[in-house]
Length: 268
Length: 359
Ligand SMILES: Nc1ncnc2c1ncn2[C@@H]1O[C@H](COP(=O)(O)OP(=O)(O)OP(=O)(O)O)[C@@H](O)[C@H]1O
Ligand SMILES: [Mg+2]
Image (cartoon, rainbow over all chains, first blue to last red; front, side, top):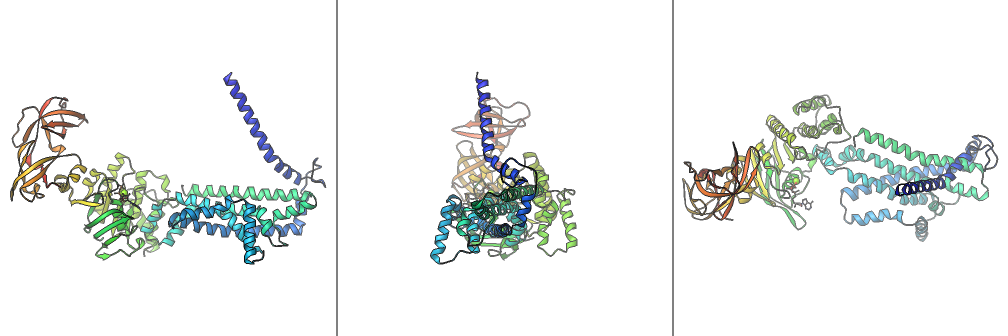
């Protein structure tokens, strides 16, 4: 009967969805579980609960260095991308620069181009200019790659801020710059923060572009893991993976919570 | 407080002319309304005065000084927007205090001024709330308080009541007029609602398609419209073909095919230059529908047939056939309206008509 058929259908769909989720998250769960495994080998069965591998991480100079590099790179990327992204969004949305649509498309394009292509293109271009690989180049690449995300988020917010609110501030005597800092920026702050977090997390776990752009001897956390995997699957990697998961999942969650709190207060 | 003058103002957007050559004088302390249908250029004029748009041609003077090159934040204007435009991230008190921060108001006086403004708009206790915690009407009062607390030279209001529902709109209209009387600030009000314009204004500027059609006191614009457009925009009017036989200091003699001879007083025939073709304007409320054959003294009458009856409770709108024309009449009723299809008499007092020269 129709009712039973459809309920059977629903069960199938539900079961299928579960399978997809398992397939996606099981490896991650395994990594997190094994990072607390006391055993010498990074595999089941677990022999006991221990923070041993996190301790080893802490004592591994190479990993710590990679961690610091990633952190500095991520923070700088976030800072530069967010600043540029806010300025670009303002120009595109508020000042109606000629050719705004074309500029917008060009700025968003890096999302659409496969990362490998982008990475190689930038490398070849700088080779052509005779610029050697450097940390600056790496940073430059990350900024190009994260800028579209910041622009998309900030632009969406800016479009929703009604122009007459800014006009009201102007009419009350605030200069355009004062209006920006008193009205526009506070109203788009949640989006600016979201953009910065995006930029940071994308930079923090990027590997494709980073492999192409990084100068010799410099490792970020993802490239460090990649290098370690070539030798052996040490349980340290599970611990490092867990730390990465906490950072890249936890940060946006915290950010979103703060943003929600802020917009609740400002009544938006 | 200052007067505002527009001299030969033209505004074009690309090849489209939104405002044609306009001259306008808003006297100091007056309440002047721009009235006209959607798209006629009211907002464009207001935004040019505000400094939010640059005129393509012409000069804008505030208090006798040319302000074309003065940016908006140095013009000392109070603007109230249609959708309130309160700062959603600031409390009501901070919203009102916003403009004071950019003026030489000592810090210890700001709170007092904010409270005075809140008292003026009769919302003394909402200072610590956020805008979204207020109703639409309350938000618009706060927007008004924020605009007047800076003691602007000119107050500009662009359809400030149109986002409110009908009852609230009438309350706010009275309230707004009271406040304007109390502080006496020169005010430019934009609306497409004729009853708002008639109720509030010292002067009404009727606009159509980027041009000023008429400037005058509400009674003047209402009783003696300068064009067919004005006659029909402020309520319904009948515009009847006529021929002016003679015009002198006492008035004008018109011949109409529908009503015969009509003698208009001088003040109602100023738009005629002399004998020749003319139009007779008769407001729907001034055309009285009566029993067939009635001939009260002082009324000019004609036989009519009632074609449509639109009963509205206290009033009734008739469409009646007189000769070859259909006329509109809006009458008060005490008992029952005339029946559709019945024969009747329509009449009007000659002093209630007014004359137009044909376009
Ligand atoms: N930035 C612009 N670019 C092009 N055309 C414009 C622009 N602003 C206004 N217009 C046009 O100018 C004309 C007048 O617009 P305006 O906003 O002044 O009308 P309005 O009288 O205020 O109408 P409403 O009652 O609907 O608010 C309209 O035809 C409008 O389409
Ligand atoms: Mg308008």
